[in-house]
Image (tube, rainbow, N blue to C red; front, top):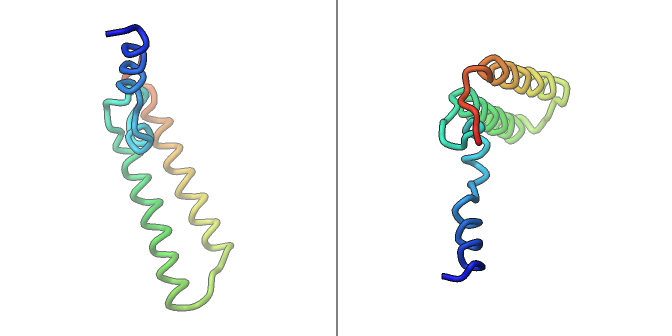
Length: 90
């Protein structure tokens, strides 16, 4: 195997799927429950807001922004609290 083929093979092996990278800690192997629950909460918030807009025909940016910012702050806080217990990547 040539040196170029070995380098190409190494690049392919080290690529991590973006979704996996978002939901795991820095070692890209350990799934973080805070990140998973945060992603589920964010998706649910968007789905429920879409449901409200479809059925009522109105969108209140103040209520949505307040709820979204509280959700994001709670996700960031839970990840920061758990940060010291996460395994460190290479």
